[in-house]
Length: 397
Image (cartoon, rainbow, N blue to C red; front, side, top):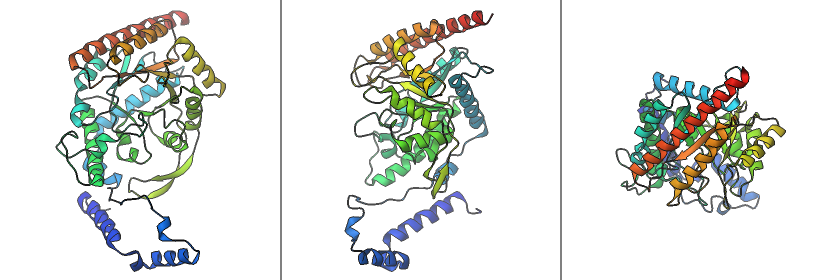
């Protein structure tokens, strides 16, 4: 514990390389295990058949010490998590009529891309503070494609954007990517902006989850038990998408599972395997994200998923991804604007079940066009929230 950060990390990498360079036969315990395996008729060729190599990964604690959380950012994250939790849970004593808006690119390939719309998000958060809780989306890896995507984490380099970084060793790139990802979140937090991300694997959250105010589980991961277990232990509200084929029951079941305690194998901040016990995440909710053959943001869609959530005893809060799966299309802004218009109508009629939306700021469209469209959509949503608030205030009277 008295060793400084550099020494501890240095010791870790030295131990890793020593183990990798040592013949298995030179390790007594390993030799015994190997002998026992042979006696049972097994062979070393049965293990790691498709593994090309292993590379060192710094323990999460080393990355955290390199880019530590400040008191100011910590207070900001705690406050935003609490606010979002109150909105999602619909606490009668702490009812917040505002709506959560997760705003930003679907995924980024560089630090520059991630920071491209920070000014837009900061301005929106300030202008609509009374009606919208705006959180900046920063996604380093995504399960929204059929083969997955980990661009920033695998192609980041200290001091360079991922688009220009060249690496010969993937494990080195991933290690640098984890440092870069944490530093990026801290930089954005320094601007006073809370961050949201998608969790695609169960290990990387240990490196930066303390900097996240809202987390997402994608459509392909929603049915995965390990992601449900992960979400049950995450410290922030978590939105879980419907299945890729549109099944809302997958997301509803995932929310129920996430709200319960779990026990699973994980990794500590020291990089040590451990058995993790969770208490369950009561701020999990469904995200209606569209599907392969259409959208699911209508009044009927929202009512159906809320009814399904009530049936199994979870609070019926729903977020709507206004992209509805169309983030790669050229006309994504027009499609997104149409969804926002429909959602705004539902909210203005008093629907408290819609707790938030996700808005995409596409990187393949000119910035001024994206800013103009997003500004208009945010103003429409803020107005709808004001109308909803007035309706409920009148009803209480």
